[in-house]
Image 1 (tube, helix red, strand yellow):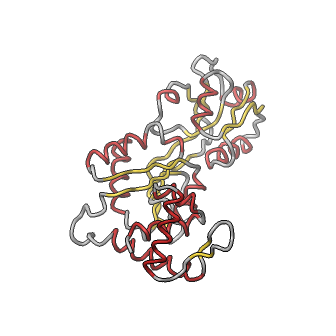
Image 2: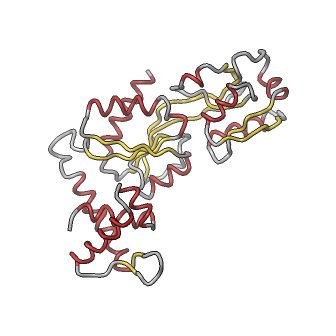
Image 3: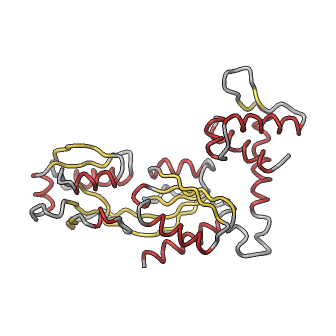
Length: 288
């Protein structure tokens, strides 16, 4: 029985799917099926109910998962007491909100990998709520997101930056107050599925401003692109490490501007905490 088989078992349990588990451990779906057969053969037991179309863990398989997690975690952390950089190797799965993917994340990851060539970092984009959920069930090692999630003893939140919301417009759009610009130009809305979109909508409601929604976009990058092409204006966080397209937009300060807090979220029991701390240092250094 190998750690590879146990990692695949954990992936199957957490995703409830051979296909999704295969994507996580970077093998084919057929390979995951073969690995689970090998695990069963090595233990001399049946771990899956294969009477249905999609195999599901049986009670014995479900009982084995926590034991497998203990073994994998013990292996990942066994050198902690011997060397300070014990965890700075292997694969790390980092979740990140899309607004960090064009500037902050690639620059921080580049610096981290340059310092620790043994690291392999897989970046998973997503919205804050989705990333926090994936982190809690163990699909991610850490996540750069915002705002801070509800405080839970199982999670550790480390703030990185505070991004005040601003009104963005194309550089050639005539200057005026944000209230007038919102009332006189189409509004490019950031989806309420995103925390930043909800914060922007709440501010607009609190200011009693009526907007004409022209379109709704899934990411801040898409919002910025539409605004940059003169299709409207929007209320978004002033991204702390912007890409050139966002940087070229005109930013207008808002009265009683809300703040998006960006931070790094990790599990309290994660064996990859040292990597998270080093990544946090690189992020903070880039923002100073």
